[in-house]
Amino acid sequence: RASAGSMETPASISNSASAATLIQRAFRGAQKRIAAEQAELAQVLNALEEADEFRINSRESAMSKVNRRLEDFISNVGSSLRGGGDSKLSKSQLRDKSLEKKELPALTVGSIQNLVSGLSNNERVAMVDALAILQAAMVLFMSEPSVCDITVPEGGKCTLVGDLHGQLDDLLHIFDKLGMPSAQNVFVFNGDLVDRGDHGCELVLLIFALKLSTPNCVFVNRGNHEEPHINIYSGFEEECIGKYDHRVFQLFHAVFVWLPYACVVNGKTLVLHAGLPEDASVTLGDIRGIARGPDVCSEEQNLGKERWIRDLLWSDPHPDANFRGIEKSARGAGVLWGEDVTKQFLKKNSLACLVRSHQCVEAGVDVTHGERVYTVFSASNYCGTSGNLGAVLIQRQNCEKPTETYQWDPSVDAKMSGTVVSKRKSKEMRKEAAVTQATEYIIEHRSALLEYYKRSDAAKTGTVSFHVWAKGLSQVLQVRLAWNKLSSGLVQVEDMDEACDCVRYEKWLNNFEVELKGGCREWQHEVVGKISAAVFQSGGDLARAFKEMDADGSGEISPAEFQAAV
Image 1 (cartoon, helix red, strand yellow):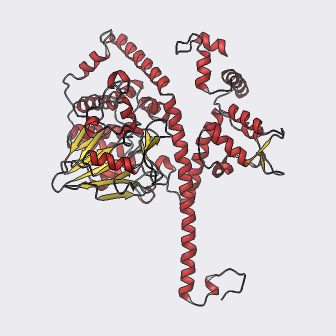
Image 2 (cartoon, rainbow, N blue to C red; image 1 turned 90 degrees about the horizontal axis):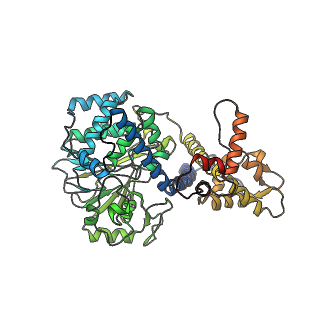
Image 3 (cartoon, rainbow, N blue to C red; image 1 turned 30 degrees about the vertical axis):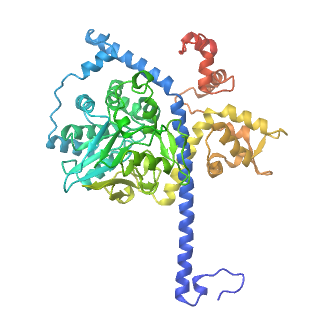
């Protein structure tokens, strides 16, 4: 036996079985600590992502207006270059024109194989081919209902694919391991095809090409990232402009607005992107009746059903397993719903389960609400930092629910590009990503944070405790997370007063400023500083500043109004 007060070690235990038990106990303890740290970091990243989506959703109205103006501008310029034509057609006339019979491009098995081979070798789809695929796909999706019904054929399977977010390697991996779409191998892609990953264009074009080649074997649901105001902030617009031009981005969205909202597999499994509507009276039949197309979320088009669309594309199961009912989501759209809501909806519509995506889960798949709700996420190591597995669900003939899961780890697949990193390095990368995202919020709310800390510093010491520092971030940024978990990445030693273990808040906030590129840095900093001070002179956010600049209340800021405000 080890002497009193000393730590037990395998060498101090004569019995080998006892030594093995001690080693196992230590190993399990270490694994629990690692799992807890990973879970805490995942919560931080999820909270920051939800805050980012809330910020984007709060700007939807303004960005939609900008996007429509840009769309009209591009249409007018294009029309004038062509010598007139359709520039004065109304939206209804344009829609009728787009519904005219068009000859779809011939996509044979050989051409699909060539497309897959080219994408595997980092080749880009030619613009003429991209335009042909998108235009034909729009016509095809227009002809589909808002909810598609799928019956798995005898001896076949239906593969349910979650968010891919522009990660082409994951899509190619799925096809390599599970086969290409066919009459016996049906695929459902459950939304969020683009944003964040670098190959959204190629990924969507491949899926749409497969849809054109085998229309009854490929189904695509709309996700919340098939919306322009999201793509403007989350990367897809920039990708489209870099690879093609803004007209192609507009054409992608001309297709996205016609994507169905859901599928029903074998009459029992409802597959939709996010979740259930807040309105308890909504039935599956009601969802089948929701309109699609341009401006579908406007009140004029859907007569109140636009709220249902938001819920279908944005909602999540409540993280508290004991929660009952419905509450608002921190994403700024959609709701959080409890198990009782799931049971009621499934029973009312004679369904067995709900398959949804929308959330990154560590194992790639998660089952909740008494095995009635499945979450599937197919973008492995999401954004290159999340460390999650990718997964798909498989449903067979006559089965009321998915019966199989296929999961993969990109770090052990030599075909998947991307640097293989250790779990320790992955944790560091995820923390660095969280710090980077948090930095953006701090820069945007720097003046409000300074005001908060000054009010908290009654003695005017120039410092605040770490508790007050974290509380200020939570209250001002409206992001509820354990900020102390990011303190080592956000607060440097020189920003601290070691005598009282506090943060010198003014010095700390001076670290957060927009990085400028190019020459004349001092002049740029001076000009940006003056403009920022003028814009934020009321201490508010950009939305309030823009409202104050808009002197005539037109909803637009003219050059004269901007100059006067600055």
